[in-house]
Length: 480
Image (cartoon, rainbow, N blue to C red; front, top):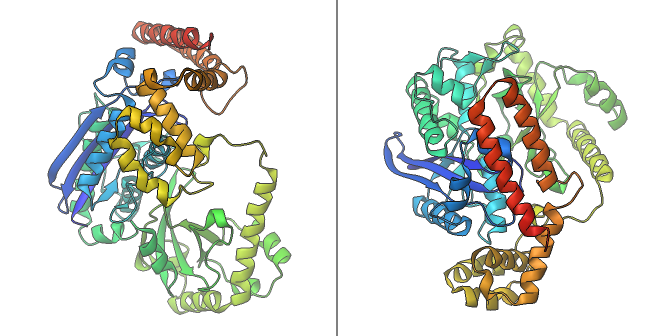
């Protein structure tokens, strides 16, 4: 890929119910030379209760949250436009596959925009943290690091930036974090010239799946309980290397070659399940092909114990036994399917709200094709077009967007219904998935106690401002 977009977000909350309010991005060429950038903030959408802790972390004042130049709707539109113009590109952040990408999924979903823009063709996505983890494991002197409380190397972005001598006074602002992530990746690229392209080759699901569908022995890198680990693994039988549960289609199995597979090959499913529970570390490792696992040549893991003590011919023999054993690989698939089925049975059966159903049901192509026309239309036309959406979720999101952006054009009954639904959610006295008024007050009280113990007058002042803002939201919706 000739272009890479290094990006970061700041949000009102760390859950799918929160909103992205800041995006920073640097577009670079394949040599990591800057060719474009984005630094943009938006207001929080109407009807949401923010997390006080999130606002403190990303230094968002109530004025920034409510009086910025861009409404949340216009903000998402500007980000979508920038990302679209950057395409085709490889998108990367720092732990973005666990957080930022997911936040884009749900913010774009709720905004009637295509959710998967950062990793759908022609784009692809990787994670700077994964690259750093592998680089640091291969050459521990790659980056200067801090230690965690447990004594392990920390690869947290702020600490890494500080240890490399970068300015961290504005860390947790999206653009600064994106720039610092880029600087760290430049260091890694300069010290890992041979493997830089290899680090990035799993940035697509198809590319990763192709590797795991072929006969092979290779090194993988994972973080286990805070420690960076290297494993020598082999691929499984080509018909049974994938998780068979429909919600786990991105999970693929590999076998840890420290284990002798021969005693396992003819066990029944129940026998194998019991035997596998006694193994530490696990004999089966699960790679998520949508999460850009680092997969390198076998030589790297072969330098580490216990693999370095094994004869390579023995290793190849083990790999061949695993891949050729249809029964064993099928049994592994069955075991993991049963585990997932048990989880499904224990899940609550309560109805999901539209906002949390993105992964439950795809948006019809007819509706995604309508998004562009809908966004380019006047607010009056947007209202009239709601009936054209085949998916009722898109109609609901459209109604809510109009309520937030142009409430005056809504029929009185529809306006009242939307406001009442928002009030029902945020004034709930229960411990909800989303942030309620009551939960916000509890969070503020906890943070106040902590700030008082530190004699942090500045933070106490910020918490007072946030508390007043929460009170204003409560006052507006308690009469809905």
